[in-house]
Length: 211
Image 1 (cartoon, one colour):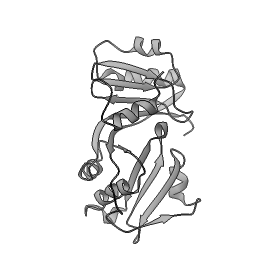
Image 2 (image 1 turned 90 degrees about the vertical axis):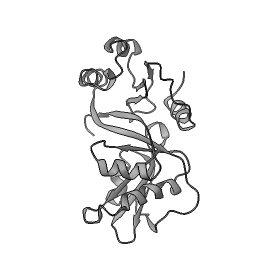
Image 3 (image 1 turned 90 degrees about the horizontal axis):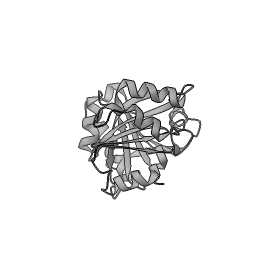
Image 4 (image 1 turned 180 degrees about the horizontal axis):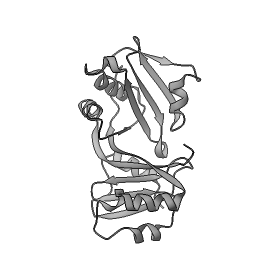
């Protein structure tokens, strides 16, 4: 059976799931990671649930149904988890050379930023700007994919730093880089798009109730 890691690797190589209106159900890649990714006209459910149950809950031909409240609520009941954020899922290729701005890596494992990131990712690394205005986090997230996140302190927003940090992540990653971005955060969406990330779909993670 194809794994989610295989599917994401194919998507990163320019071979996303066929836009045929179907739903693919895959096992969870880990105890931590479960959820739903909606690619163009193809949805992937990665959770340890009966595929027949998943298909029975989805009206045929309704491409929006897998991200609608009714299905998400049913998935919560089936998995004992709760629905997380609905995010834009974007992808960028690694970029050669050093980052476009100077960064310092946080090496203290007990730093609050590192501790928080490790709740959701493995092999976490965090870099900050010299003035502390922003930071970029890299780690292996869903199915081992490399994921990036950036933060800009409020008083430094609106000056292009988010775009620079998103671009810097591409110079720091060893492989294809994914980003989960809240669609309502228009500034963040613009920053990642300007840094060369391409929209791939939408994603909802099913997270443990105690998370």
